[in-house]
Image (cartoon, rainbow, N blue to C red):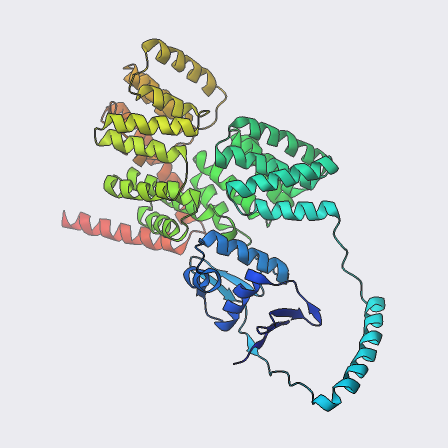
Length: 530
């Protein structure tokens, strides 16, 4: 069996577990080498996640995120760039593949025993000469400083996307700042990991405020640093400042056009503003590997859904939910999609599956409560809303739902005070969904007109999910009211305008145009039969 291969400019010796580029050995060992060997032994075919986990990690039980992290480390060791990969390609939704077919090399033949000592002596002399010439003629790779090593390790942990690794990264960034308080890279990293605490791990707004302060310092020190502007946008995003967040993300993209994470983050906020065509275009205009932006597939599916391409959205939602069980965004999005489309039994099953994956999200608990209300189980609803509030005690909507649907209903005095607080907070609140809380509160007091006016305000601010408003029991007392139907009609008009923009654009995805033509053809057929 052949044990030596060439992969482009690399030589891989499976028996010796050695990877070389020219005469330089690369630091590829342990699981990284086993992963590379698995790919080499399978030629240039795509190797799926399940096969990689079975061959490289078994009997240990790991998930796709573990495989992704190990591929990232292997790429770093090989000097590969995931945005323009040479050695290892990501095949979205399937696994990984070598960038070129590996070529078997002839096995080295050991010299005859009686000639070994003269040969070694000659090799020793030549090696000494070559070594001296090499040191004189070749620029040496600089040894990283202690600060650089600290930041590299912090970046590595931060990229993993898990709570415990986010905390490890934060501790390293803080250590780097202790040594160099004006290090813009350390300030940026410390800002992003603090924002992640707020946005992803439910720690409250104080972390995002600290993140904003750190990112502001980084931008002041390095106004040309795209990562600093991106961190500033992320902090403002987590604090609910839509326009400030968009400004930060857009500046990051101007400085670094390949910053797909910032581009996609801005797209999410365009979506929240009702700018669905702008959001979809930004998410389709990525410059690197789309798989590197973990939330992008879910966002595209959401934009398809809001634009009225439900079948295309379902394909994408279902696929990412099945293939990425550790993706917090898909765990939220797929059950919510089913719920908004009135498929409540399927939504219940998907929700149970998502919660079993260990995703402690207030939105999942809230959806659990809404499903309980639909099946007339107020006790289960009260428990679910209380759980959502416990997960996100700083969330206004979770606080209101826990009070309005609690086992002890909120008092009229509490409701009146809460409504006054909410109206005051909405003056400077750009988020459309914030108006839904006011609608829930006003319904609880019997103010149907006021509740519908709050929903109309949400539509004016960018709310485009008519399906959710129709499906949710939170708005049952006003469903069917002519004014409520007018709100839904206003959403439909705005969505139609955005959908026409997409279909007329040269960048419109082919699958959307095809589905639109099929829908129009089917409609014409129905009209002729009538």
